[in-house]
Image (cartoon, rainbow, N blue to C red):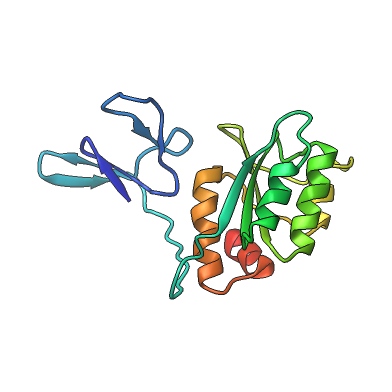
Length: 177
């Protein structure tokens, strides 16, 4: 949880919304969990608690942001430097330029746990489009979709999942629960 300015947020839902505002931490889609009224804590809703239990975290997890016309070279670099996992912040609903999608597939085949999020502020990734680079094709490649989780938080999730010995199927199940 994150507690700032008498407000309690779920860590998985909170985001910094402004560079220097005192009330910068917000949960725009779902709101706060609780707030303090004087010394009394008032709960607005119950937190949804999930955890990953492991002995370590895997620090070798890259993160790449997709952009129009991207070649996928940064994904290939993550594979070459020995990363164990990779988070890709995709375009829109979960799509990549075709050359970048091909690089993502190479990463999966190289054994990396590849997780897809959206670089969009709101919404979730989905296998909506079936073109080369579309979300449906990325799912078929074995890429794990992390719906509604921003890239920087998905990276921490992948680090914890790998540290707990989770593979793509276990992480998919954890995200579905």
